[in-house]
Image (cartoon, rainbow, N blue to C red; front, side, top):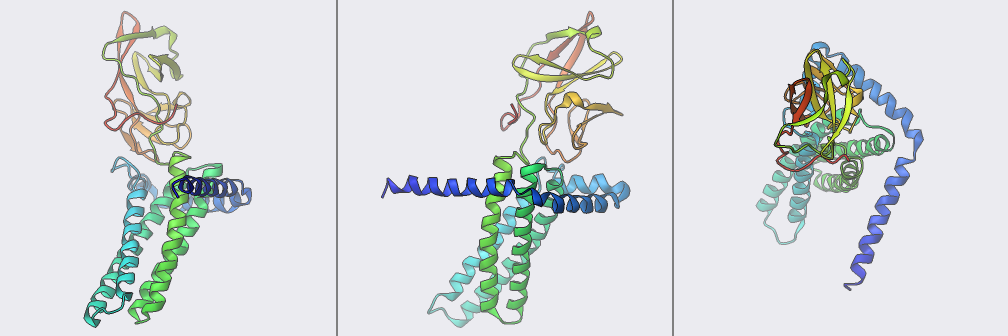
Length: 319
């Protein structure tokens, strides 16, 4: 029995990898995905000056990490509670009053799960629009499955209110199964594609000032990548001011050597995330983690750097 368990686990793992590979190769999904992206872009642009504030909230900039996983966890937990209460209400020998109470609690948990699912759908779509290729295709299927499950949850809630409890129980059970399958795809987007993870790469840890290059070697307005103590850095020069940041954007590891500084904000070249030039704080998403920034000084025309603060939960993942 002990020998069979690893084989079963390996088969499940291979099946999951096969499904992800299959979905990632479906290029026919690109057309509907780009059309959906254009619809989302139109809707956000229609917000005018409030666009950045709204998208920052949906991305989770204010939270310091993506908002979507938190809402998805709340939705899954609430629906899981509903399913558990449904099973409890179906056990034989329960008093009628207890069954009614359990059914009422199940309906309330279902309503909370439905509301959280709606929030997860909106935040997930906001994050998804910046994905590419295989991750975009897998994410589209992930979203379609979650939408289907959400429809079933809404139908289940309505059926329960009308007294059709068996239909409601069946609908939420099927929806929960779909949610579990979709959650696997969502996990793959995080752990395989790095979506939602801090991808800013290895951080410089130097307690002492260290010379890097002479100021005249750093071209005005042209970012320059340098290597120091095993960490990649990007230097920006504006007159006598020099800014040193991490090599990659925390969002999806865009090379910040291709970025630029606009009105005191460092701009990501891929998706337009903006960071404060002094602190690296996110000013505009889709990035939610800060850009590593380092202390800089000029000594006799030499640019010197000193390492920044250590991330309290570890290094970025990009290498």
